[in-house]
Image 1: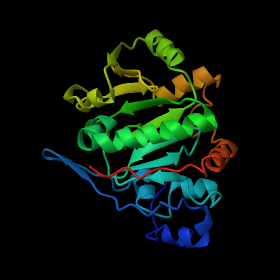
Image 2 (image 1 turned 60 degrees about the vertical axis):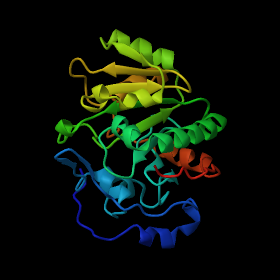
Image 3 (image 1 turned 90 degrees about the vertical axis):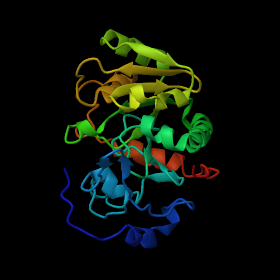
Image 4 (image 1 turned 180 degrees about the vertical axis):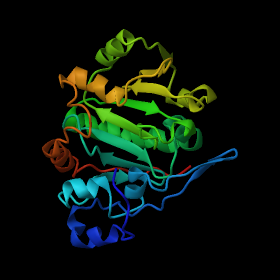
Length: 261
């Protein structure tokens, strides 16, 4: 865990490495999302601080300015970034610019923006790495302080859905098909932890009926990719070369900025 000490902003890095920053990038202003009487606070969480432009984060300490940023594209409410500790080349994350706990909550508020950004990612990703699988461990406010990252994020990886389904079924999880992405916004999913996986058209949600190991979805993807334990743990093996190759291969991606909803 990085202890945050610096109030410097990412603008310093932008001035030094302007040629490496996507042209549609600008430092997001971190906000919170209020749900009823609860406020989703983001202060102190490393990913939140990175999105807010803090200089003292795990990413900047790990990569030391090479590359200076892992941002690929950004819309009003979402950012596409490369995973800090990728399982393989092409491991991306779609994260919220404000602090949501799950994409169930994000889709509820920004359905059209998510759909447009997702479609644009899928087109670019398929041409570069092959068709991606999207997966997520949707969290809740009650999970704050656990070992899980509770800032909403979708993983994109070049793996197939059938292999993931077989492993999760073997592990005792029961999946439910959704008719489309928007069904993820149902209150049944926004109020409890879940596992979501989706390819271009098939959407599946697995309810966490019992406690699963930490970084469970990374371990599932790693099994598909042939990565042994504990090498799927993001803190054990970082794979800097895979991260840098991912950033290089996504440099030419172009997006039509999805309008905020």
